[in-house]
Length: 132
Image (cartoon, rainbow, N blue to C red; front, side, top):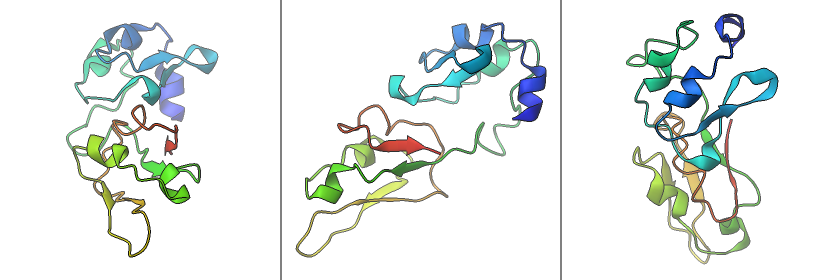
């Protein structure tokens, strides 16, 4: 993060290049990922648009960021309401629902499988998915 802050010129080229429009101007003018707008497709357009080389360039060996999805205590499954929206949106199958006798299945997140794309965030009906 320190290297990014040092190299980023806050020109907004990455924001303009993002096809899913999840990048926006954040605090201090730095780009900010807003998963409530959609998911990252890992297309690399932001990386290619950056003239300052502020982004990680070895996406094949690791994710562009280290964030992972998790559910907050406001998740409606914890209140007994059946919902599997986050798991249905996860192409990586990082969110599973194990059957529970006498209760509603709750989401279980696999950090090893989670790519950090954020596809599970926007569709959550209760805004209970956080990327940390």
